[in-house]
Image (cartoon, rainbow, N blue to C red; front, side, top):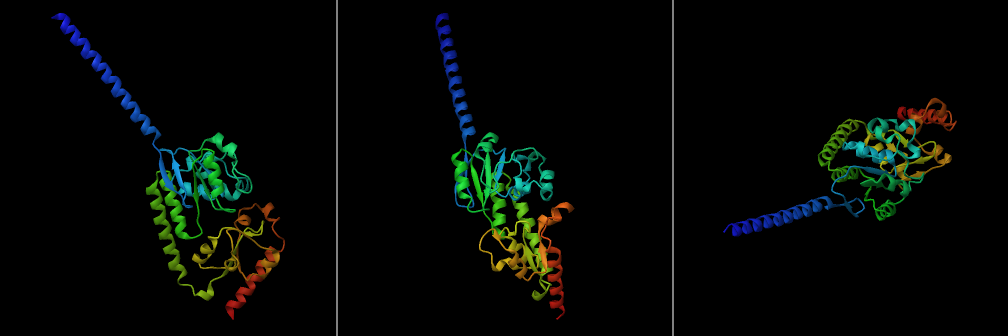
Length: 298
């Protein structure tokens, strides 16, 4: 009898042990499933991008300060693991380091024409890369990095609604949808407030404006046409804008009938660097502003 009880007890113990192993194995499988679960989003070029379940690090390729600012807007600047591109290592962009001190000593990961340094990026191992239309399409860059094992999201905007779409997409990627919605509301409220003020200005009183980089003689960013218009100005480049970035000659600069020049590069330069700006520029601005005042009086 005792032998039967002992045998039955042993059998129960063995069955319990097997059950534990089976349950543990199932639990492990579920854990693995949880870890390996991915998610898929559609970027602004219509590409499907497969992302890891958690995003802890971000790289930006293209107009770095602009892309970084969108990441700042959803509160995730500390995720950026690359440094600013060479063109942005100036006083103009000093607040990038205030919002994200972590980028200060990080490496440059792109060339002067916005091409990615794949080898350097692979060392950083970003969970996701953001890139955008700058000089040509961002699709080739996105495909190059995706094929190298780095999920890459394309952002595109030339219209105000696309700015909100870009923020919404970044919020989705970084699991910050609520912050993205807050930004979009702030965006709409600000535009409404500015429009209310601008609507009181007669159209013939809107100043003619040139927004440009006077050092490189270029007018970057197609969306600046909208910026100027929303602020109550009349952009002179809207008539010749055929691409995201356009170049112009000194002759064209003299020909344009503008009285306001917006050149952030000059405003950000130190006094010594301002001296390297075109020597004719101060007199040119005085002349154009004088013409504008005469026109307003007539």
